[in-house]
Length: 171
Image (cartoon, rainbow, N blue to C red):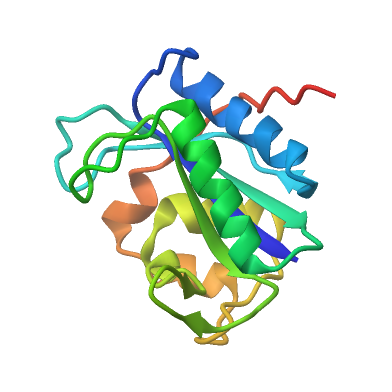
């Protein structure tokens, strides 16, 4: 299985943060991503500047028959289509799609590091994974998702809110 995390903290010409994420998922489906599970939305403060708009994130558990390079290229096109403009690190963005884990593969090349190098430190990645794949284990650290959450700071564990809202999938 593969894990993606999708986030947004700005509205776009397509609509709200919720809309941006839903559109991204529908575009991923068009690219032959077979979604098995999608988490609820999770909201967190912006990092490191908490005065910026809050982030919404979701996690996806999926299958994909192509290679990770093709998925990465598709993700970049989808981000551009929705209106992402690459700026400074941690700047607000209309959409951000990260490959967290691609079938447990370990990779470090110019354009992609797998598993995502900071996944184990991010509440907005770990909580959605716990919801949709509680048996997931980090491919390098060999620790399960609950262990990784338990090792987050207390602040990180309380600065996240699971919203009672789900993604709109067009079928």
